[in-house]
Each structure stands twice: as structure tokens, then as C-alpha cells.
Image (cartoon, rainbow, N blue to C red; front, side, top):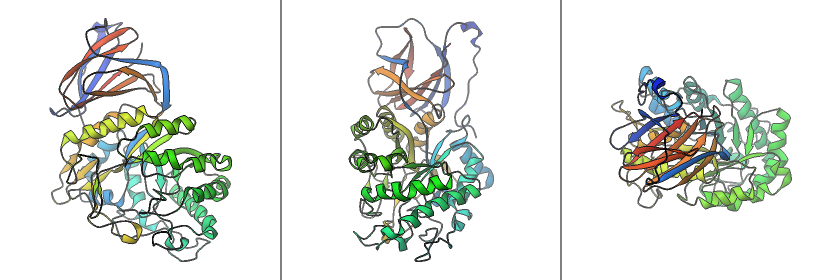
Length: 480
């Protein structure tokens, strides 16, 4: 199924002028819709100008996407085969869909490992040889590896993995303050990660990035400190991956929010022995707006790419995870909600983020199904908002506002692109520009207000673009 449609244009009469392709998703009803091409001409000083200049480059872009979970596979399996294919094409096809290229797949259980009870890959206490290690559950009909392989038929993407908890027997306990890995199991845990990557490779799936712990030191998952993470990476995880010859790149660990990354990562990154194994620094977005922390992190470690690897809305029994003024029910069907996420993506990009990954890719009409495991920080009634909603009762599929805003980045900004200079202002407009590997320039404009006209300035020329109210507009052109 094509999301959006194409209009053909005979450019023969416009020889010598640079054609700008225009795509719009809006409250008015456009959905990745191709509009008539525009052309650069004489600049108009009377219009607010968004000036694009590709000679100034910032961070390299890794990709955009969301997260695989058993919950999403359960929802897909509620559809017939043809409907499943349409959903996956809409998510991963780079021409007809969102073209997602950066995905997360958790290591064993998380709060949306909904195909069964809590699990790890080795449930045998004291099994330091990992002789009972198995990814069998991930190979089942609702399994993570099954989900990844099904998606790979429709596009190409990297996979980042992180872990809420190691096997319980590796820790002192599951009570607050006890959720630390015993040092005598550091090497077993390092080999656990290696076996996970090798097991997935044996089934044709590459784990490109490994982040050892998800939101550690925050109380709801492990209490593992960044000092311990530093010691594990430099003394065990890094050397074990090196000895096994694995190309998987190691990340610091996923923080719960942006300021945590700025404040906690130095414990690891300032240690030369640990730093030599670190590729990138993943943060989550649950501060909602502390973007300056990302720039501070980049300024301190300009050679360490920053990733946004999780953010979502959630309404749990005892925890409401939404920004101020956010929605009061899950999931969110209204297209207008997409503007919130579009603005977040723009701001993260402008503050040095290289990869942007949302949390759940697919959930059902109730924002689930979810896993309940209180001991592992997974509550009941954990209603969350996904990229795509599948009604498991009716089979109806809803592409959320988040889907469309994220698709304007995933489809048009491809891996290896660079963020480039885009300066100026226009009422209600937030914008960011990129140059792809093929040379094409992409300007994404998120308009959170009423209809407006802006001038795009480039190489001394300008074009007038009409941006609908409550929309995202992509302008893409190939320099001559």
C-alpha cells in the first residue's frame, strides 16, 4: 500500500532551473502527498526566509525508526497475511512507506514482551557456562526475531539492542537497592551478550549496536551504576566482543532522559580504557524538552554520536508519562498529535542527535498488550501510544500522526546524510535541513500554527512555499 501519492511533472520547460519536490502531511487531510514542484527564482525580501546552506555540515544521520516488541507481533498476527504486508510496507519501504532505517529490539523481556511471562535467555541459577542459554522464545510466532525477519522483507535497517534486566540469578536480588549484578558474574554477563549477538546472527539477523543496560540507576529497572557499567565495558564486555570478532558496536547504556546522559556518561567516557570500546551515547526523551543537555554532551564529547533511543506516552496505574498538557488517554488517534513529535524530532536533530528511535512500533486499540512483572518494574494497565494502532477486534489499522511526521524524516533523510545549516524564522514554523549521500537537499518544516508562506533561500535565490496549518512539509531538491 502506498502511503501518499505521486504527481508527475514534465520539467522540460524548466531546463536550467532547480525543481523542488514538495510533500505534505496536514490536518487538512494530506498524507505524504506529493504536490506540484516549485522552482528557485529571484529572492523576495518581503517574505520570512528559511536560508539553507549545505557547505556547513553538522552531525551525520544514522536513521529513524521505532522498536520491535512481542506486543507488536501479537497485533500483526491479528491481521491476515495481506494486511500484515501492507503494514510492514508502510513502515519499512523507502519509496512507498516510512522507510525506517534505525530500529530497537530488546534483549529478552521488557514491559511489552507480551507473548508470555517474564523471561531471560538463561533461567538456570548459577549457569556461568551458559549451557542452558536459548533464544527459543524469540523464534516463536510472536517472537522478537520473528518480527525482525518479517520486517526485513520490506526494507533495510540497523538494530540496536538494550536490556532491562540480566537473568535474575546474576543479581543480588530484586528489591530496591539489591538490583546490582554481582561482580563474580560480570564475565558471565559479557558472554551472555556475546551469545545473544551470535544466536541472532545464526538466524540471519545482525545486532548492530549493543547498549548494555536500559535506564540503569533509576530505581524501576536495575540499580546498576555507571561506575559498574564502566568496569563491565572495559574489563569484560569490550574484550569479549573483541575476542569473538563481533562487529557489533557498544554504546554507553540508555539513560531515561537527556540531562542524565550529560550528567552520568562522563563516568564511562572519561575513562580511556572504557572509552576505546564506546561507539555512541543513547538517551531517552522523558524530560520532554531539555535539549540543551544534548548540546552540552556533544560539546564535551564531539566525537561521540548521540542517539535518541526511546520516548513515548504512557498511562500506567501509578505513573503518568506524558509532557505537560499531554493526552489523557491511550492510544492517540488524532492526527494533530503528530506535531508534538515532529517538533521533538526537529529539536533533537538541531541539538546533535544522529539517530531517532521511538518506543513501540505497533500496539492495539487499548495501548497494549503489556507484560505484568512488578518485580521487574512492569505494571498492569500500562497503556502506551505506538506509531501504528491495530484494532485486534475489528482489524482496522490506524497510522497515527506520529507515523506521518516520523515518516517525513525516515523516507526523505537517509542514512549517511548530514544535518546542514538552516537559519531564519517564520511564524509557527520549526525546521531543519539535511543533505543526503546522493547530494539531494531536504528541508523539513513543521508548522504548528495556521497556514503560512515562507521563502526558502538557497544560493542567492528563493522560492515561495505555502505551508498548510498544522502540517509537516518536506521540500527536496537536487543541486545542479
